[in-house]
Length: 167
Image (cartoon, rainbow, N blue to C red; front, top):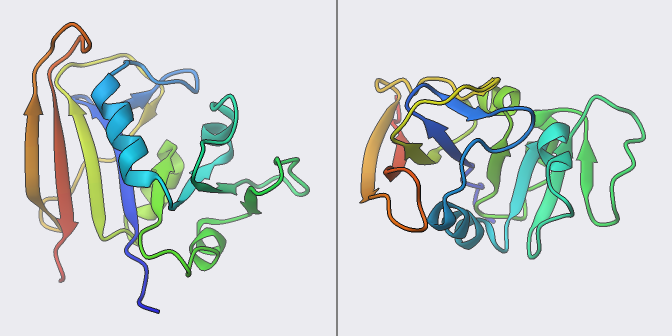
């Protein structure tokens, strides 16, 4: 089996905000649809707070939850680990596991990821959780799709794919 390609998937504002009060700050229907399409059938790695922001586990994905809590009461089928390194070790049978947040997990995951699937919301927001700035000496943009606000989207946004430059 080949080595997994770890992909960070994130929606971020122009001022690096990704959330507030453990929730999304915006609603973008196409972004949620893209998230579902990309992550379906794969492992999704997240911190405990991100997991708890869902009302229930997302269908057709294997959830890997990182928590410092021993004996965390996760639903059946959810893999609970105590570090990002343990999460990475738990997904070796998936060719493209996704790292879905939150802020601390993203920060740690940048060194393991090979791809970033980023939704850039073209506005600024007040928030309490942030995505680190992308270092363009380590990451190169390989694809971009612009989406303009309409009846389903209150903001312009872009889907951007970055790949890590092999240094």
